[in-house]
Image (cartoon, rainbow, N blue to C red; front, side, top):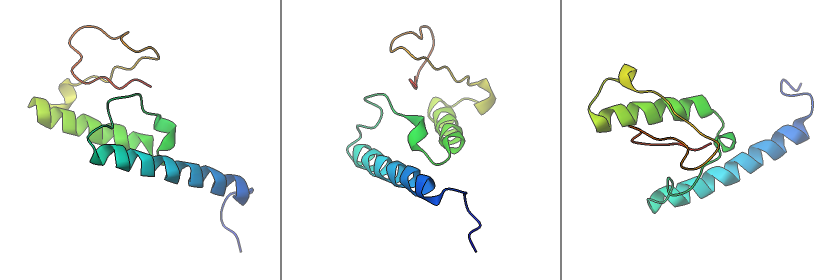
Length: 90
């Protein structure tokens, strides 16, 4: 019995695309190049987990409380001004 999505082929295609994208992310991360260009959060299986980890890491790096951080995003590169330390463009 299949306890998965109604259309497994579509699910498998999406999963394969995301797995390949994550392989590229891993390659970029090993070369410390992952944040040098825009990243597509749709490539992740659970984007909310990535954003939570990014927030925690930023709080540790900046030595501030996690509640003091605000997520700022933009659809245009360079659109966020001010005190933004780490900008994630989506």
